[in-house]
Image (cartoon, rainbow, N blue to C red):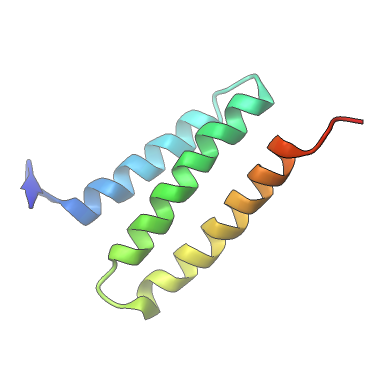
Length: 79
């Protein structure tokens, strides 16, 4: 599937990049972590859509780790 000459895989990558970029414009840390988490999940999907796991695995590992950090901070009680 192509939209404006962009493949579905590329589109997911662009959406992930945009979500991460938007997350860093947030003043509220909770919103930053939520939007960044969405970007991380999109990057995991992007990594899974790569032609080979060898290419996508670093993207998947990094973004699963960042997503876990975001979830940790979103769910912990503020002391």
